[in-house]
Length: 349
Image (cartoon, rainbow, N blue to C red):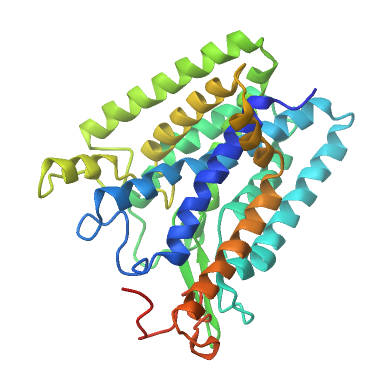
């Protein structure tokens, strides 16, 4: 089966958007104190620079599952494909804690180890390998159950200092573990919620065998249903996101609060909204191409390479900017996960 243009286009588009997010994280002067989703400090423009990038990670993870399905259908031997998933998953997890973590922090001592999207995809591949003999429909149902039900975990009344909660929490919620006399290990992308997205993406792979016009219509319908369900659940404001929306200082910020959904971990409402938009992007990529979309799709053909290179490129630009502002290299701080920004030194106006 030849490459599917809409997948490359969707993946390439979110990779370009992702760059905006990481430029803001590393180069925005007040990135540490002015969080884009904090209603007390953000501005509408800053908020939307973050909101649009919510599309990136779920699209990566979902389409990783879809690509696994397409590869599975081409595989001659299920056992060999399972081994491929195991090896690929382990490789991505190792890559996360080495090349990706260094590109993010430029800390040769690795004082902050963070498990993010590449590690989550690696974990998903390993679990998918364990499930590969299960039907795609059953895998999709498991994925949907995770997406719709994992928000229940924080409200389960575990006993105080529960061992079960301590073991399960890193799988379901963002968690940080101090590393004695060294630093911290952060589970930024709890693997179970992201696994749900990958499993649904795997089950959706069969749709790409439909005629192009039929799958284009199907993607529009799924996108509409997802966004409608998001609006209904968000308006009810009871379940689907750990951060309910609330009335703010004016109508604009109340609207921002309504849209301010949780990525860490990806809530049900986060999944419905981002994946709903992703399906519209996939539909747009079906049967439509021009010079611009062709350029975008090229990035989608080399997602891992682009992901790694863009971190190093943006981080090098950040250090050059600091040097241009008069900061000496000896003043730069890397061990505190501040990307090189020096402590207690003004780096911009």
